[in-house]
Length: 426
Image 1 (cartoon, helix red, strand yellow):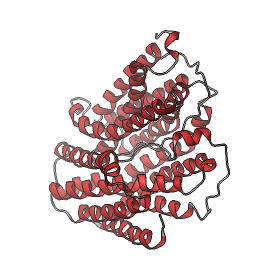
Image 2 (cartoon, helix red, strand yellow):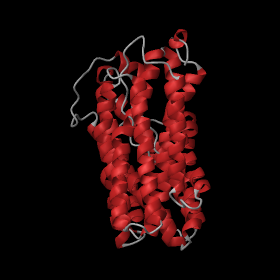
Image 3 (cartoon, helix red, strand yellow):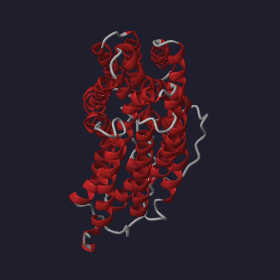
C-alpha cells in the first residue's frame, strides 16, 4: 500500500492504475462488440437481438452513470472503482460463460441470449461506477495545469481501448472456448487491475470534494467525457438550463442526429462484413477487427491531430465531420471488398472524430460559465441516448436490405451537414 505521504498529487504509479481501470473497461467492451456479430451467427440468433443486447446495456449505463457520478463524493472513490470493476468482471464471466455453453450447443440460442442480456445489464448498471470515480479521484488530488493534463490523458484511455480491444480479441480465440475466449481473458485482466487497485491505490481521503463527471457509454470510435472546461465546471455554480433554450437547441439536434448515425453504423458494420465477404466465421472476425481498428485509428487521428492543427470552429467541425461521415458510410454500404469497406469505415470514423468534438465544444461555448455543469450533463445524455435505439434500428433496416442502413445513414449525415451550414452560426 502506498504511503500516506503520497496523498498530495498523483504519482505515476497511481495514475497508471487509474488509466488501467478506464482502459480495461473500454477495450473489453469494444472487443465484445467486435465479436458479437460472428457469435450471433454461430448461435443462429437474429441479428436484431444482438443489437438489442447492447441497446439494453446502454439504457442501464445512461440511467445508472449519473447516480454513480453524484455518489462519487459520498461513497468513496476507490470503493466505486472497485464496484465498477466487479461489475465488469462479473459481466464478462457471465457473458463469456453462457456464450461458451451456447456455442457448444448445450442450450438453445434464445436462452443463451437472455442470460447474455442479463450479463450486459450488470455491466451497464455497475460497470458505469468506475469512470466518474476515477475522474473525481484525479480532480480531488490535482490542481490547475496538472489536473487538465491528467484528465486529458485519462480521456484518451477510452480512445486507446477502442483500438486495443478489437485488435487483440482474435488472439484469444482458442479451443475449447472459441469466440467466447476473449471475454474470459478480459475478465482475467479485470481481476488483475482490481487487485492492483486494492493493494496499491491509497484509501480515499481526498483534500477536497470533486464530483465525478458522467462518461458516455464506451463504444468504438467514441471518446468519453461530457463536455465543458474542467476549470470552468469547478468554479461555476449550479445553474438551470432548459433543453429548448435557443442557444443549445440546435446543438442538441445536431448531437442527436449525428449520434444516431454513428450508433447505427457501429451496430451493422460487423454483419455487413460477414455477409458481403461470405467468409468463414474465423476469417470474418479478423476482417471485422481490421475494419474497426481502422475506424478507431482515424477517429483518434482527427481528435488528437487534425483538430489542434486545423483550428476549425465548432460549426465547421460539425459540417465537415458530418459530410465525411455521410460519404464514408455510404461507401461502406456500396463496397464489395474488404478494402472498400475498410476505406469507407475509416473515412466515416474520421468524420465522426471531427463531428463529436464540434458538437461538444459548440454546446459548451454557447452558454455562460455558470451553465457549464448543466450543458455538460446535456451533452452526455445526448451522446448516451443514441446507443439505446439506433443500433436496433440500423439492424432492422439491414434485415430489409443489406445496403439500406448505410445509404440512409449516409443521407442523414450529408443532410445534417447542409442543415448545419444553413441554420447554425459560429
